[in-house]
Image 1: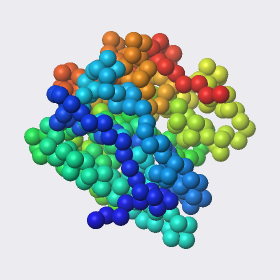
Image 2: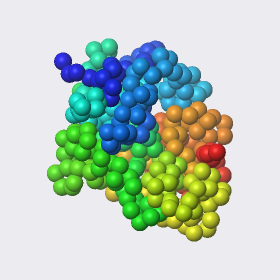
Image 3: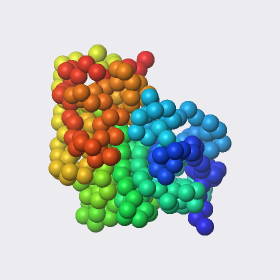
Length: 354
């Protein structure tokens, strides 16, 4: 039996809503996001929050967007078994180590395996179809665990993966450094994640680079769908223009509100969008894969009802996000949707921060 613990040593958990009718043998697993901790100080802070301890987690949470049980909110997956696995390890469910002195447990890989084992015993082993999804750090975890997930089922089961806002790029920040590579380097080293990263990547690259999905998405064998905003607000705030790299606070207004970005700043963000499109080029040539990259200032569009499926939800062409994911999952239509650059998409639900 694997000992599975959150950062603080508390037991991990998940929320489960049973499927019914035609969906009773279909399973949707969503991996929660919530950032990473790459040094002892930040992990000690995290273990006093819901992203590091089940003691701070809500006992019940609303299931909306892709987790909704209403056909008019979630037309393709509403009657499936829907599970949200809580995130409390700080390494996208990949760590396997501990720091006894600081009282920190890095057990993300074990949490992932134990949750899968438990759900298999609750009927998931009989699934006719399964979808592994996740947002942000959970979207990255979905990419990293996608093939593991597929291998848990017989070949007759339709198994696919959806990563929402998980395409974190190894980008240069506004000071010329690589803030996110620095963070990911700390996560991989501190939490012992390297042995749980895709072998197809670690056999040829430094494990830190393998935490960036751009180096492994084209090698994922299972069908994978990437849903991402081209101007991902988390990456703008924490990777491209974080306060630590913005020495003169030139980006303070722009990182909180896209409408306050200067022309040179917007040009910089267009360069980031171009980098994202280059990163998915090889991936998108594989017919099994799906893509929805809209030119919005957003983060996590499958978890919110207004962006997932609503009267005015974001579209590329004449299709919204829920319809595009459903078309790809059920092989109704091939989906490789890339929106035109800002400011031409008028369907965005852009995020503005106070």
